[in-house]
Length: 197
Image (tube, rainbow, N blue to C red; front, side, top):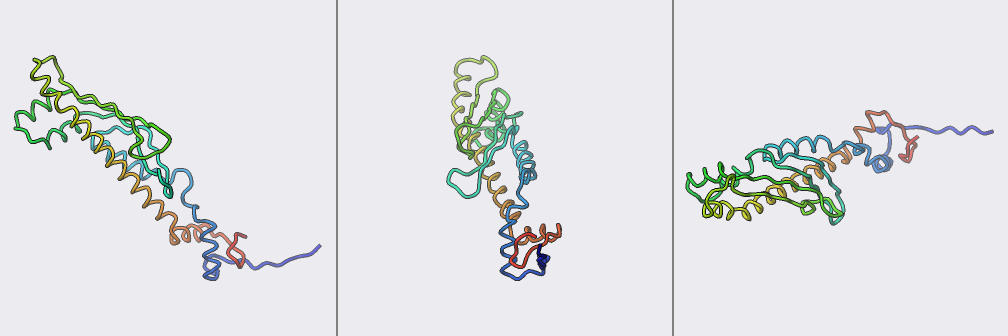
């Protein structure tokens, strides 16, 4: 039998080179399951204010082509319809007609193998509320394509915002400062080379 004595070090006691080893060995310590929850909560609230009721949220990242973020949704209330109508170049009376006489509803579901803003299959309804005369019904229906483009553009903007927030937060959690703080807080110990003891 032989006894080997090994010196152990706190993170602060390591050399600069050993600290780099320790940091790299623990780079993902702050990004285990659930790290994204604050971002999901924030984007869900923002999407709800924009008129989207958020279902499942998906993302992949942050190093490959095809990475991104998206969410499944249904639209709630008239928020999107009103925002769409407000940006149209119409008289106040015609805007009022569109807002009060139009049924607008949509939903989006994940489609494909990736998770980004273009991986959503949208079903968007935009039609007159009642059986008005044909001319009035046709007038309302003439805005359907524009409304669809508007909803999809709003959706994609939220998806890009979601991915951007996730990437920034991930970069922050995996930064040298955050990883070092976690190591110090947990009082982990290392050998002279920066490997865990």
